[in-house]
Length: 138
Image (cartoon, rainbow, N blue to C red; front, side, top):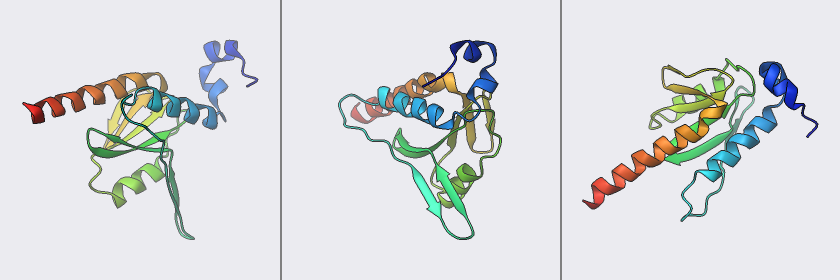
């Protein structure tokens, strides 16, 4: 890929600028890696295009029986207009996820995590799902 590992370590913010496709691919691979092995999984996205308004969500997943939009930002990405638009149009979605160069935070109905935390997020949701299934069976 022509990437410089030294730059990743010494200057991660500069190294990942304009590397959006790489970060989106990383998150997509992680989503598939932490999916239930007993089911065939595919990656989905959301795209809205109109003359007045364009929006795109990188991934739309089902977690614990709910549809959750996921936005990936290679850098510190502060604008989340597409994610906010999706949540506004789909009020049944409890929250959206953002993976980026930012630290952990919650703002309104958007939960932000650093890129390295995707495994933590996916395993937490798996645990919530297991508890819900056990409660239904018991």
